[in-house]
Structures are given as structure tokens and as C-alpha cells.
Amino acid sequence: MKKILLATTALALSAGVANAQAVTITGEGRMGVQYISNGSYFGSNWRQENRLQFNFNVAVEGDHGLTFGAYSRARISNQAMGMFAGSRVWVEANGLRLTFGNVDGALRGAGTSHGYAGGCGVGYEGGQQCGDSAGLLSVSQAHNSTGVATSVTTGAASTGRARIDYTMGDTRVAVSHDRNGSTELGVRTSFDAFTVALGYTNNGGAASAFQSVAAISGHYNGGSWGVGALVARGNSVTNFSLSASAQLGGGDLYGYVGRVGGSNAYGLNYGYGLGGGANIVVGAERVGALTTASVGVVFGF
Image (cartoon, rainbow, N blue to C red; front, side):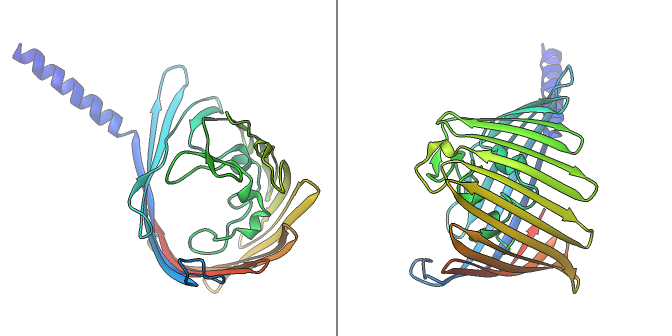
């Protein structure tokens, strides 16, 4: 009996070790000072901010060419206590992936050629306004870092999101759907130094300036420099952004100009590598009458 118990225990421990090898933890730390022109930081125009973030990823290879994976995120900041994001789980085979849960929609995942939702390139925090996304950030299905997935402009929790991706070489096609009625499509492909993308969201039929939005974007990667363009149109309103980046003085300079909701938008950002995966970043942007700026340090691990 003792031998059986010892063998069973050893088998359980070895299985635990094998499973542990499928778990990876990555993350980010950051600290900085943020400015906003309307004094909305609890009545002040500026605040200090810091964050620590852990990303938990699981990948398991099954039989018949199937791969299974899962993800969640823990975030701790000076603005809130530690919180776990809602999880997502997927199964993949031969370039086809089905994902359930807290995941970005097809527009952010495959419907833009550059940036996050087509922009968010200003600031160490990844954009306070993201005017370079031409309004796509506020109308697309979103992964939520501190809760369950959210949908479009309402910010309401999704009652269930499914996303299908098919990747073949440098081309990806994605479709996502929320049970509340929001559906998105995205297609992105690259050839040589060019990347082009098409995206669409029906915005769940939300009563807003963008009930449904179609977007087209392109980016050219010149190595030490790059240029991008994004146009988004919905309900007879056209937003756009033109962006450019270049290596300068040992760092990276980025800027954009555009128009969002009838207002002019522009921003400028500079990041300098400090080694060890750390960067110091300073940036500012203005969308309409609102100006935001920040300076901070961010590092990944």
C-alpha cells in the first residue's frame, strides 16, 4: 500500500511539473506624472501614477494538432487595489483559433494596420486620449484589464464574447460577436514593408455618433522610420489620422495629426531606451479643446 501511495504521489507531482512548464508570467511596471487641461484628476490638472501588472498565460498541446490556451491579468496601481481581469480561453489548430471570454474584438485584433486600435502611441501609459485611433478606441469591443470584456461606447460588460481568427502567413481574418448584438470584422495583411487592414463594427446598434463604423488603414515600415494612415467613417462622420515615426538621438520620435468627431487632433511623443527593457517616455496630445501630457518610465519583464 505504501508503494502504491508513493507511486501515485510521484505521478501527481510529475504531472504538476509538466503543467507548470506550460505557464508563463510576463508583466509591466510603470511610474510617471500625468497632466490634463480640464482639472478632471479629482479637481486637479495633474497626478502621479504608478502601476504593476502581471500577465498569466497558459498553453497546452493536445492530440490531433490541437493547442489550448488561457489568459488572465492582475493589475495593482496607486488608483486601485489589486484586481484580476476576466479570463479568456482558446483552442487552435492549423491557423484557426476560437476564443471565448475577455478578449479584444476583431477590429482591434485584425482590423487596423498599426498601433492599438490604430493608434495610442502617445505617452508612457499608451495614450490618455488616443486621438490617433480616429475614434476607433471608443467604438470597438475591448478587453478589460480589471474586469470582464466590455462592448463599444456604453462600456457595459459583455454577456459573452466569441472571436474566431484565421491566420495564414502574413494575413489574418477575424470575426467577433457579443451576445448583446455587437459584431466586428477585421482583415489585415502584409507584403514586403507594407501592412494594410480593413475593419468594421456595428457598435451593437448603440445610439451614438458612430452606430456602425468602417475603417481602412495602411502602414509602411522603412526600418528606422515609418508612416501610417487611418480613415474611419460612420453615420456620415469621417475621422482620420496620419502618423509618422523615426529613430532620433538614440530614441524613437512619433507624431500624428488628424480629426476626430469634427475636432482637430495632434500629438507628439519621444521614448528613449534605458536598457534592461526600460524606457523613459514623454508625450502630449490635443483633441479639440482637451490637452493631455505625461512623462514617465515603463519597463517590461
